[in-house]
Amino acid sequence: MSTLETEIDDLWTQYDNDELDADSAGEDAVATLDAFLDALEEGEIRAAEKRSAGSRTSSENGEWEANAWVKRGILLNFGLRATEPREYGGVTYNDVLPLANSSDYAARGSRNTPDGTVVRRGAHIGSDCILMSPAFVNIGAHVGDGTLVDSCDTVGSCAQIGANVKLGANTLIGGVLEPVENAPVIIEDNVSLGAGCRVTSGFVVGENSVVGENTLLTPRIPVYDLVEEEVIYGELPADRRAFTRFVESSVSDHELFEGGAYKPAVVATDLETETLEATEREDALRE
Image 1 (tube, rainbow, N blue to C red):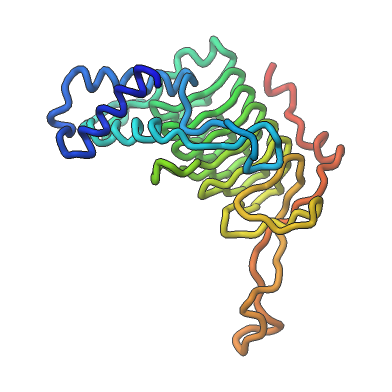
Image 2: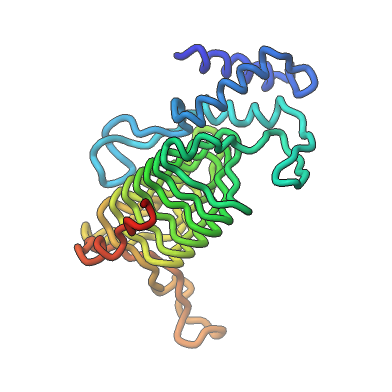
């Protein structure tokens, strides 16, 4: 257990026992919280990591598990800090934290466009990333190297976005902060999400997958995997092409419905070479 983890656990025990709050937290507690946020932004700690064999996705190199102590540290930054007026772009806003300092983005080859690209303190932005306005990346999110966050995208708290991922315009990546034991939304390396996709409630998108526009990925919607010929929930296996279709609902025939009722589902097929080529990022964006 690291020193930082021990300090966060100690603060959490005091906070959970109503022995510590925003009014009574001293300089030492604030210093620990600041060091914690720095570690998140540097990518030294993460809200979830891939560890042991037996993956939630079809890849064989580990299972995604939440780091409960990291999520507690994020919650402490809300519980042990007071909301106060802050300035950004000539506008006053009120929050417990300032926005992330993006002054070093250019040094690592990343760029964020003005007037609406908001990265909250405690979010990690990797190298060679592009963030197009308007877009929002919340505390605890991890955005890997080479990833594109397009216009009108939201990356929720603790969401883990891999390297070389493309989030199409108007994409919603949900956040999962509580309960702290639950793993957040995971988008693995080299995934491409079409415009208007929504990924929520801890869903895992396996590496190299390509998801069609306006697809909703959530544990409540079945994934019909035509490769393994099975119906699965909460994950899209690696190396799949996925899109939305409608299947017959259990409501079936009803006097209120002509021809029965239908519900959304996701169909997953083999990833074709043509699909990969069509979704490759344009080199001009990186020049």
